[in-house]
Length: 99
Image (cartoon, rainbow, N blue to C red; front, side):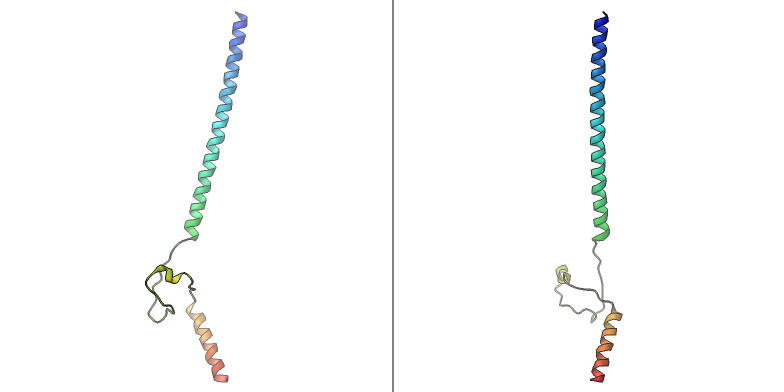
């Protein structure tokens, strides 16, 4: 009877170790999935914050670009502040006057 109890106790202890290992493995997988999801959400947030489209409506005559109505017309465009353009124009006028 004592041997049977000891054998059963060993089986229970072995089963408890297996359950503990399985629980540890499940916890590790859950943490890995959570980190993966968090990483994906951070990447999505970064993309959303850095990669967005802005529509600009400019008065006629302030756009120096041939447009066909396609978004691809603006692939290689640069938006320049009006004051910078005016400063450069003033420098050109000044140089023309002195020449």
